[in-house]
Image 1: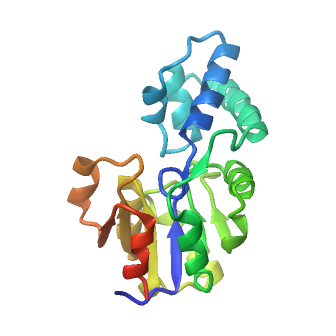
Image 2 (image 1 turned 90 degrees about the vertical axis):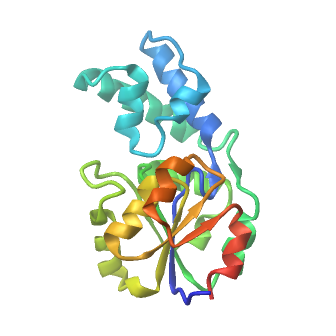
Image 3 (image 1 turned 90 degrees about the horizontal axis):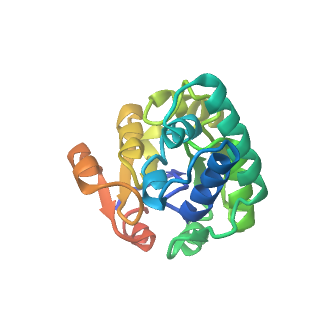
Length: 214
């Protein structure tokens, strides 16, 4: 076991399965713009590296005006429907309650205005001291720049910190920032992408954190 003061949690694929709501919002935006809907698995494959990337890949275009319109439509729909189908992964609430005395911060490439409503809707927002979202799309995971400001502002000891995520970008963020890493395998990440990064811990269920974090 390792002594940890501060735990950084990713959202999508780590704490929450929000895939259906993301796909529904994206297909709404596509329909409104006159584009055909995309299959569930295709849209999900674009999740994790920021909203602009999700929109551009789903549209099949990087034209600024189209992407901007897509972001607007997606945003308006998603904020109105943040958790129609979203569910917590097994033991998510239990593990947050178990570590309620630890400092916990959300670290996501979602915009903060997307993160807040789904955390509130699933009644887990109160567990987190802060949310670090992907509002600045020039500074997203896996860059260390996403962590450094919050580490400085909250005076977090990186040597006693752990990031938990389901994708390669989460593990890379931890490695780039000099904090311990934990890969949760129930999300969107693939073995061939994540294992070569050598995360400090690999788990299949969030409940296993009880045996890792002291």
